[in-house]
Figure 1: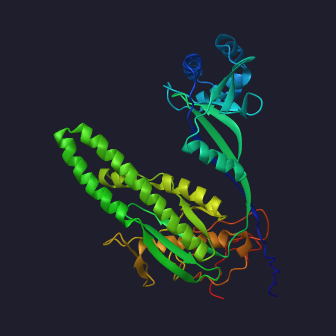
Figure 2 (figure 1 turned 30 degrees about the vertical axis):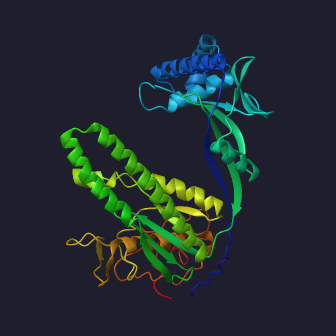
Figure 3 (figure 1 turned 60 degrees about the vertical axis):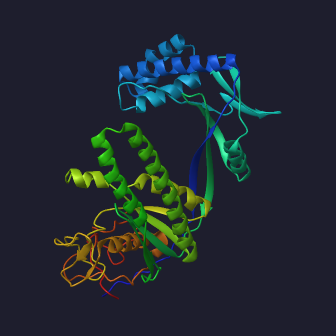
Length: 412
């Protein structure tokens, strides 16, 4: 006798937390400048001393090392703790500079009279008020505070500037559709899929970045052969500026698409790739994935859009027509995806669609999806999506899985 299952649709309200940093320039007097330089020098020496001991943070605070560092440096407890956290996380053997964090209100205060000041507690019962320059960064800082951002930590950098660490929490409701992004070396593929599984829109971004960088690589090889190091340095700065500008424009267009189609955004969580040769590694390492991700996180938060990070497991090998997991890229043409069922399509476009479908299947408010075709002809799709083992209400392809045995759903 078939078992009927009542599936409850769950609406998830996500509380997103976003962090930002703003660099505030200071204008100290000569005496204060000397005191800050001395503090930065001693902080760097203390950090290198802790690194040389090769201890964990727990071992540092539960041994005599903590008391010895505090007595020898003269720093207060909060400063020693902040330096030790940076030192323990450092992977190298020495640091040339360090940014010391000061927590509000225990070890740092902000006040404003005719000029804004940040008062730092660098030694016990010994503070220093650092004046802030009212420039563009200060105006941006004031605007963020008015928008509800909170600053609970300030940092002093090695070049004697103040870093303001801001944070904000926002409740974001999931949107109806999903926009998937596949990032690769030559361009970025975009797919917008409805909650019913229908493709609403597909396009590409970032082609001009690859064309420009290809020309820059050619020019760089000529300059390296001629040992023109000044020109190489200028070319590198121009390349960074060009990439940053175009990434910002590209992210703005992606946000417009997400608002237009009422969609959340999903991207891959890329893992470390195996070495496939010097030429491939050179192209792969130049993909600005982290920069795109960071800008997307910020813009999505500002526009109340959820950014989902999806595992990259088999997104390039899954066939959206038959549901099988095959070899993926065509052996004769890497840009094409070819499946035994007869499907031939652009591999980047297919990957962006797979990322979108995977995110839709994993969404808690989409556990009643039955419109995606998953075939039992050749294999399961379990490698594409992951189950939610916390309850019987599984948010992926486990609607009819009661005994723990995975079963393909098929077309219904």
